[in-house]
Image (tube, rainbow, N blue to C red; front, side, top):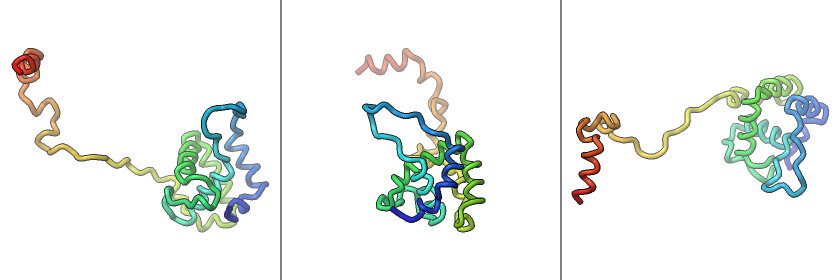
Length: 146
C-alpha cells in the first residue's frame, strides 16, 4: 500500500468521515461484493488528482481499489454535495494540497458518442421519407406482397 493513505491521517479522516457519513452495516451473508473503504477510495482520488493519471490507470498494487470505483465514489460525493466540503477540508489540512489539480475533480466531460452517425441526408428521421410511405396500409402492404 502506498504512503498516501498515511497522509490522510486519523484526525483528518475523522473530520471527513463526518462529512461523508457512515454506510449502514450489511448483513453477513449479503449478496455481492462488499463496498470499498471510503478512506482508501479518498486516498485513491487524491493520488489520481495529484499525479494526473487517468482514472482507469490507477495501479491496483497501491491498494486504493479500482480507479473506476474511486471515480464513481467521487461522483456520488459530488451528487450528494459532500465533495465540496471534503475538498475544503483537504485543501486546508492536507500538506500536498498545493500539488493537486482540484479543477480536474470538478470538470464534467461530455459523453462521447459511440458508433457511426447517420449521413446528414438521412438524419431527419421520419421527415426524410414522404408522409405517404409512413401509412400503416403501405407498410403492411409491403409485407403482404412478399
